[in-house]
Image 1 (cartoon, rainbow, N blue to C red):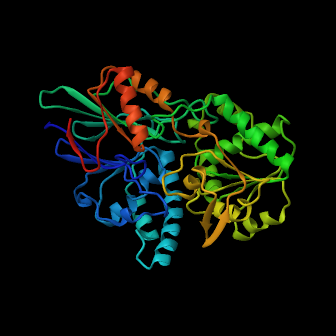
Image 2: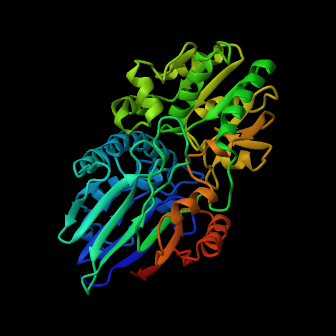
Amino acid sequence: MATAKLTFYGAAEEVTGSNFLLEVGGKKILVECGMFQGGKFSEDKNYEPFQYAPTGIDAVVVTHAHLDHSGRLPKLVKDGFRGPIYCTPATRDFIEILLRDSQHLIQDEAEQHGHRPLYDDNDVTECLKYFEPIEYNEEKEIFKGIKLILRDAGHILGSATADIAWLDDSGKAKNIVFSGDLGNPPVPLLRPTEFIDKADYVVCESTYGGRIHEDWHTRRVYLHQAIEDTIKNKGVLMLPAFAMERAQELLYELNDFIESKRLPKIPIYLDAPLAAAATEIYKKYTRYYNVEAQYLVSRGEFVFDFPGLSITQSVDESKAINDVPPPKVIIAGSGMMNGGRILHHALRYLPDPNSQLLIIGYQARGTLGRRILDGEKSVRIFGEDVAVNCHVLAIGAFSAHPDQHQLIAWLANIPNPKKVFTVHGENDQLLDFAKAIRNKLGAEAEIPKEGEEVSL
């Protein structure tokens, strides 16, 4: 086969919009087709034409369902792509509900700004026809001489690292591993991130490449303390949560607190229909759980349900939460506060000094969550100026992404990679991580720019 080429079309010197094009053996394989996210749910950049011809793409590999990795798939199909889309079975199911949900948000946003939506529901339906799920560690020859293996990334249920292998001109085996988003073990439900023992090249996420998280025990302590403080102050604890993984992790932890009587019964609301739908998919894929969670399920325990929990579906049910006096806990989407029901609760409770906003996931630049986390004391929600008087707390250990120590440990298992490309990170995180790779592993690290091509 001819020399392989890799081009970086997204998540280069930024966190969102993952999009990489691998050209090898006369085939064009797209890894990720993510949405760019920031202040608006769907940034203007998503509407720009792809920098390659979608009709010329032979296959797509998606590491997991998060929209910054999958959100432009319907646009890709709308613009002419007709090849297979490879991912795990759970990822395929999650992508369906996420794309359906995002399409409604995109439609609403397009109507507000007076332009056509990025894609419609028919485009989502058409896109789903091209999925060909494969299981973890199943070696799949996707084209003659080109093989794909997905391994458990431990980031969210069904998330994977993608290992693509081929033979070079001399007949020597070569491979490149795309980390996707790696996990932050140990966590409830999920198995630890699976290590890779061979890679010539690695495209590695760097979300927290310059950060060190709190000890994993600490996150439970902080969460418990935040709820206790909320009860003591007769306030409201707002938890903006991503529909997948963070919401289910919170339910798992809260279930344990309640079952072990570490907390009194308090009204807890999951005010996120998408998270409720995702939880049903979690119940379907218990085979992907870790040993402890599988044991609990085998005993018939309901790890996502407990006394005091209410799961709201309708808008009226969501509004009715306001009628319940504090203290109470509200888990609502979206995780970066750039849409969803969390905005209605934030409008009401951000000005309350007795309440708390607990940030437990990555907040992209420009999002409401990031602005509050960075210390803004007044924000605009639905056209109103809202004072931020509540206590704002962030727990990095709840993040679904690994810190620098965990990233280095994952890479250290790969002997002598020719090069590591650091992506999916802001500049300070990329620089710190690339420096750590060079100093701690003695490996060559490169921070690619958008549109950059490299030969492999």
